[in-house]
Length: 159
Ligand SMILES: CC(C)(COP(=O)(O)OP(=O)(O)OC[C@H]1O[C@@H](n2cnc3c(N)ncnc32)[C@H](O)[C@@H]1OP(=O)(O)O)[C@@H](O)C(=O)NCCC(=O)NCCS
Image (cartoon, rainbow, N blue to C red; front, top):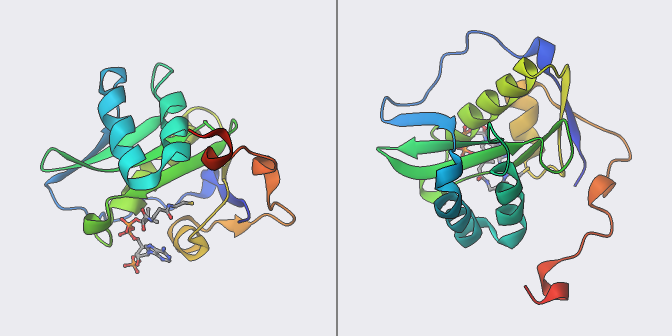
């Protein structure tokens, strides 16, 4: 799973969002930490839940969430694995394919651009086509396993 590079200064502008009016994207609040982390752990496992906890440990938080009719439906973290990194991100399986993942990606990358970054790195990419098409991300050579080398897995620690 390679990392990918995104040029934040060249993010597509003025994109028409496919999101319905019933979907809201915003930063999660510290007070929502336990709710959000439990939701992520249930759907995406303990590694991503741990990263979300880290993202919820700063002010402002470094995690955006998507709400559909007020229900938590997706999340995206940034500046967690390393400074300048986007991810992890995930959308509830039942709500995929409606533009939520892309909207979360844009909100996070816009926040990173506003914080002063010129580039973002998508860490340990799964769906490379999704990132290439949405924001022109390109694969970084020799970036597997990158920063994730030698990482403990939950199985090895019994957590
Ligand atoms: C990847 C993920 C966040 C995308 O969320 P989503 O809400 O379904 O994505 P969107 O609806 O915004 O899709 C935007 C576009 O990307 C495409 N796309 C979505 N998932 C894709 C994938 N896995 N591979 C390639 N293209 C994908 C969509 O078809 C859509 O294309 P279109 O504009 O031509 O219709 C979601 O599939 C997910 O949670 N996957 C499991 C967790 C994961 O892999 N996270 C990424 C780790 S790096």
